[in-house]
Length: 466
Image (cartoon, rainbow, N blue to C red; front, side, top):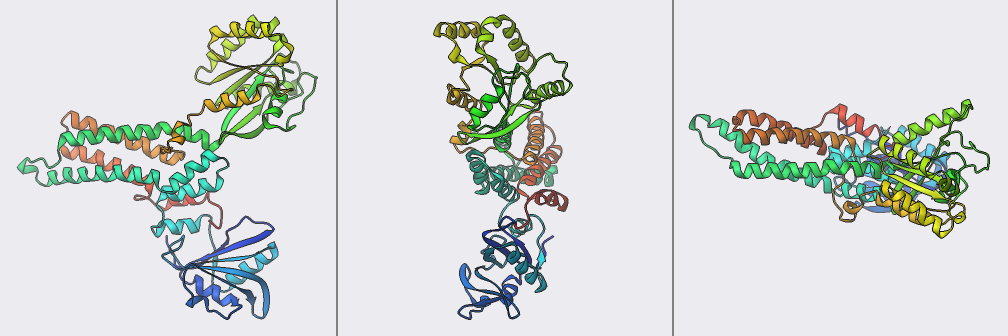
């Protein structure tokens, strides 16, 4: 898959800006760049040291396209492992296009999505999980997803997998050696040590697999459905959480007829708040469609905020408690927060009474006034508590990639088979088959085992220029 041709692409976002960076990588990258560059001091880029900057102009024959700054990175000491130059020009889209077209005429070709990072992988600068972390880092939009991507890019996940694979590979070699001396009936692999290794690998794999639940919500944001009867303040609460007028607020019941979504970062974790249509019996066709969507959004959400209006709850508490129990029974594993809104209308005694009524339900209760911004910070803290941030604080490896998760599951399945085979004195040749399968799935994560189709699927999701 690795070609030595020189590729070019815009490395900064498309569109006008203060500056833009155009990247070239390949065997002839510096030569091609030099042919279009005129240094203010008549320097030949081919004769300059790596990791140096040079001021000059990009010239199309006698026509000056722009004053630029050129960075030189000679392989293998570059991102891709190849000769690379980066041209920092002014951010005019016209200038960008003119320079790229000039470089194409001089022998470059346009890079495919993710081709610079693909070359870094193929040249051994990154393993596959680190390469995938580059895309995660680019798309990270909160502190937690950024931290996980950086940890993976630094090789934390790769190192953990590589160490397990190496230890298993050593025992696999001893098992294979025993097969070569089958007639002598000798054992090179210490079965007790092998059993301890398998237990340790099994423990680590289960921890990594379990971390995916946390990693997935951190990477994609935690969907939180705001539900309740019409006109209890769902839209007002959404506006208070976001600190902006995102949803229409009206005294007319049924104002929100569709779901409204927006995102908020709390404590470095992304939350996706979904303001849904009020749940009630209605003859309005449009509103009934919105209510049906509400139940769909509850199904899709990770957390449910069930909002009640304080005075109504005081009067209809027995009816509402049955509704809360119904939602709890329908979604037993989904965190449910009962939120009593407009608490400024209650006396202290009435607040205590509502708390006592809800205590037997064993639900999380938050008393707020969305309009007066009372209790909003406490509600945010409660939402944050649902996320296991302990692993983040301890800088543990957290799996966020579905492909990695799938490979870990398959590796665990094979390791479990090997462990069972060891405990039941299965012949070495049969155990060796399962060990090879486990090694294969470990290798799929880091790219020690790969194919063109897999690489194509992974790097197709990258942006061009990375």
